[in-house]
Length: 68
Image 1 (cartoon, one colour):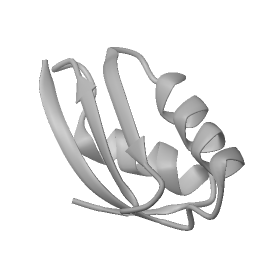
Image 2 (image 1 turned 180 degrees about the vertical axis):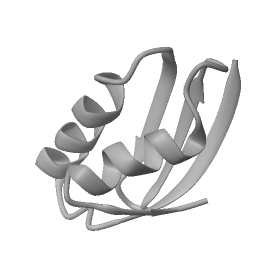
Image 3 (image 1 turned 135 degrees about the vertical axis):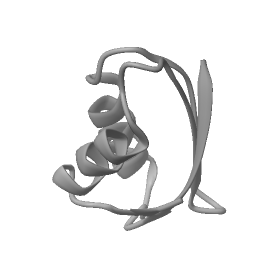
């Protein structure tokens, strides 16, 4: 699996972390996911059948911003 490191904008509390986690985990081929509310960073393990752009789009669709 590949690992994507992202800077996430719009995380305000634990509820927003859960919302983001659910949006990412709904994608296929997602492995380990770590979201840090304090730093606003996320680390996403994903299979080769999903692109970083697909992950970013899911994050944007959930109401957040993401840069990698």
